[in-house]
Image 1 (cartoon, rainbow, N blue to C red):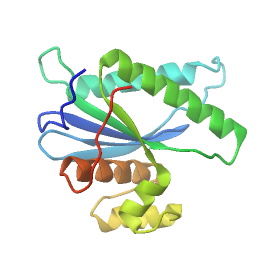
Image 2: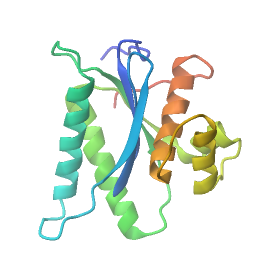
Image 3: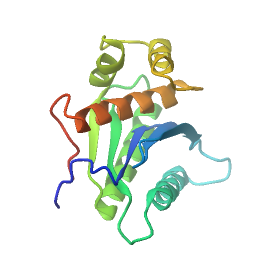
Length: 176
């Protein structure tokens, strides 16, 4: 697959994966939209349904960003790469969302890249161990109206990704 270096005509999606997934989307016109969405298991559904709902949500994002042609409007997907979780359930949920995202990106032929938590925190706060409130404050300082720490983390991932696209540091999305 050829690597377009976040071509200006493509959108970039940044995610903070989890039961409450934060998202931030940079559109080709430079505008940014963001929020968070819950994939909490529903009372009478099987354990895998949350991942099917996540996949359907990704499909909706693809349709939203896509131009009228058949090619995707998403140039790359970046996500917060978590190495340690406080609980087994959180680790399992993250693994499920990550597997769903990776297979979806492969199927859609969209480059994707995980960015270590410390890298993101250092990028927006100057310290790799910043807490949730510090992340929210950092994103508010950048002019975003942030309602949730998951949303703030996704915005921080997007801010990092856009910095790479601007050539401020080395890096870029990879496929696979």
